[in-house]
Image 1: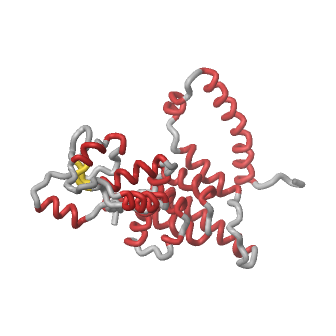
Image 2: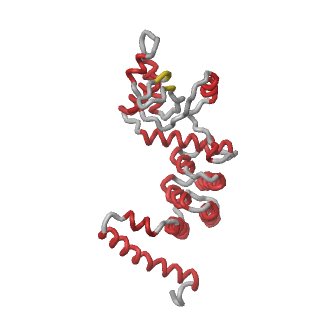
Image 3: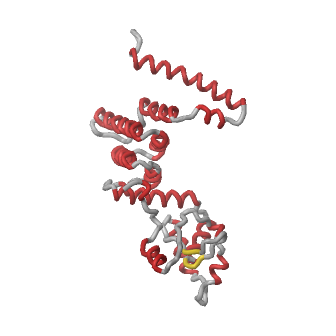
Length: 266
């Protein structure tokens, strides 16, 4: 299964088939904002004596607070969508947002679940047991082989998300072959540490070689003109230029050591 074929976890095939059977021209919009929805018009459309059941809204709010995934609402395809089905979900989502369920948290939960379903389809055992932020980061990798390799890295090393994040950031920018090489290097580092410590490893810090590899991958993906354009003024450009010169010193020293080894007596 390719990244393009991964189905959003909130979609419901039976509901979509039912809408199609009715001749409805529908579309799935995962980015619909609550602020766009005409809540009052949606409630006025209901045939129930009481448009909302408070206990249902409270139950849904609690579930959303735990990042439970709900089916999408059905609404008119207008500038101000009117709910035709899902008023309790809209009310609960608004309430959850008010009591502090940030949209990024909900998005991370949904994307992590999406990555889990993708891993299940690829036959990657144990992926669902990884922490949600780790699954989210790995889910950012669109290439299937790179996704699988990164999942193996996380499962093998128990790498925390703070350590994994810069690796994923570098891998996202790299070509698939380079991305696989970077991930393979991280896995070799981990196995080397395991051998040195007799198998008693606690997901230790990455080696400096591994950190250099991901830094270089990021640097090599940069566009010089885009770096220039992203600097807001001459002072920032001068500061970045100075830091580049300072960074060149250890890079040159590392280059010399890798080619010729340490000097005699060092």
